[in-house]
Length: 416
Image (cartoon, rainbow, N blue to C red; front, side, top):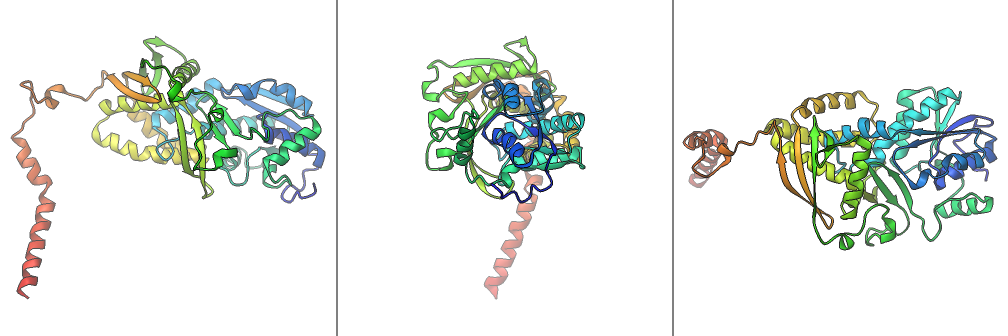
C-alpha cells in the first residue's frame, strides 16, 4: 500500500476527520494512522441519523482516535438548513429534496470548529473523487477556513472497490455494517436517506426492498387513507393536527407517518456535479410531504408574478445547495428574496396520504388571494366579463399584427 500520491506531507499530522462510522471513514481512520502515523480527531454530527450513531464515539477510540467529538446538530439542521430549503422550494432537478446536500455544509462548519479547537492543520472526509460530496466538503471548509488543508483519502488510496475496504476491515477486526452481500452505501439524516451501490447501479433493475430504510412499500401500506393537517407560519411548519411542535419532532413525526404510507420513495437518474449521470435512491417521507403542503399553500398566497419568479429561483437555489455553495453570497441573497415572499405563506393545509400518494384536501390562509366571487361561474360572479374583450384584443395584438404581415408577404409572393 504505497500508492499515496496526493497525500504527501501527512507524516505525524493532526487530522480532524468527518467520521460517520461507516465503511469509508472507518477505513480512513485506521489507514491514515498506519500509513502516516497521523493523529486522528474524529468529528461526528448528529443530524438525525439513527443506525450510524450507535456506539460511534466508542468505535472512534477503538480505531485509535486521540479525541472523538459527537455533537447534536439536529435543531440547527432542521431550522437553519432544512426549513430554509423548504421555504425556497428547493428540489434538485424537481425531485430530490437535498437531504445529504443540506447536511454537508453544517458538518463542514462543525469540522472547522473542532479542527481549530484541537489545533489540527488538516481536515479529512470520506468522499470519493466522482461524487458531489467532495465538493460540498472542500468548498464548505475553504469558505470558512482557507488555510486548512483538506484531504479525501478515497481519491488517492490503493483500495479499488468497497469489497477491498470490507476485506481490509475484516483483516483488522473493524466492525462495519457493509458486507459483500449487502454493499449499499447509505447516508441518512433527519431530512432523508440516500442509498447507492450494489444492484442499484443498474438502472434497469428495480430497487430491492432491503435497500429501503424508513418507508414501507406502497403495496404493503394501509388500505385506508389518512389525512394530516399542517400549519405554516411565514413558510415554516409549526404545528401538526393543530398541535404546536418543534422542528425536529415535527420532521420525525412526519417521517414516521408518511413512511408508513409509502410516501417519499424516489428513484432518480440525476446529473452529478462532476458531469456523470448517477442512479440514486432516496427516501424522504417527511420532506416530500412538507414540500407538497408548502407548495399548495403558496398557490393561494403568492401573487402570479412572485410565484412564477420564485419557481425559477427555486431551481437556482436547489442547484446552489447541490453544488456545495451554501456558504456563498448568492445563497444569502436568494434567502433574502425567499424570506420576503414567505411573509404571506401562513395558514393550514390538509393532506391525504394513501399508498405512496399525496392528495390535497384543503388549504386555508388569512393571506389567501383566492376570491370566490371572482372565480365563480354562479350568480355570485363579480368579474367584469365585458372587459375581457378589450383585454383579449390588446393581449393578442402582436399575433394579429404578425398574421397580417404574413398575409401581405404571401400575397406579394403569389403575384411575383
